[in-house]
Figure 1 (cartoon, rainbow, N blue to C red):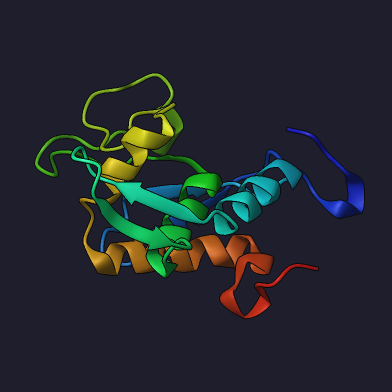
Figure 2: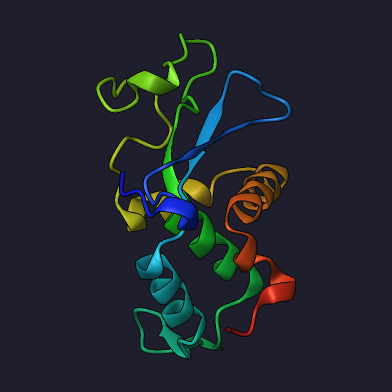
Length: 147
């Protein structure tokens, strides 16, 4: 963790407790310059997405949900959300060493993270994103548009 005095600490994470599952915790890290830069680059990317046959599937800027997913990814520091709710829950302070029954394995890569995120219910995505915005206040949609 790097401490920048009154500017804050870049390694300090916020533990968000899920409203309907109070034993589940989502760890949110505050954005550094790197995350801000990556976020802006993603938001500014015009894409032409083609399928395996070369047909254009979508052309344009990232959608609102793609932007939210990117913000969730950029701020992700871990979670103890289980794969199987009938099995013992991994304590949040053990997610780095215990890999069994973690929906998002510790150190998960972006591509896998996005696949898992895509399986979550929409209410859960909304809840996570709201918590992310609560930690990274300048990511609030009303503040978009740069400095």
